[in-house]
Length: 103
Image 1 (cartoon, rainbow, N blue to C red):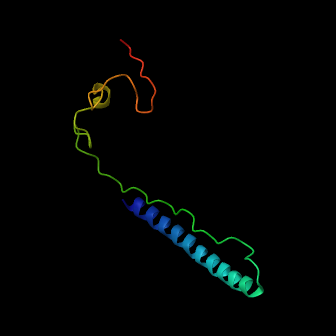
Image 2 (image 1 turned 90 degrees about the horizontal axis):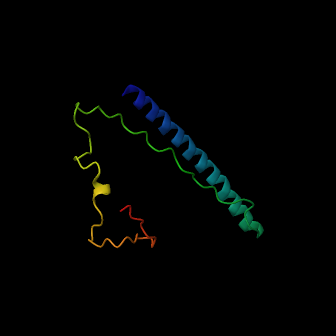
Image 3 (image 1 turned 120 degrees about the horizontal axis):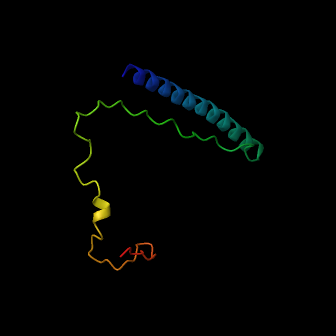
């Protein structure tokens, strides 16, 4: 848990540094736009974009007790056993392709 907290803290610091750099670039761009407007021209460079930030690191999960599987309800082959929820088993897939039967 301590390792996760340290890594999460580092991730937040990197994201904050990225935001600060973006705001600095944005202020420079705003100044450039104002100067370009005064001179009757377009800005020399495109508006800076805040790129994707690092995603949060998943929290560590305590192992479940032996014999229990998290998220399972005993229907391991549910998708394989069910043919079609509507009862229409004409062999046609939703994308228009034809399902080949093994029978």
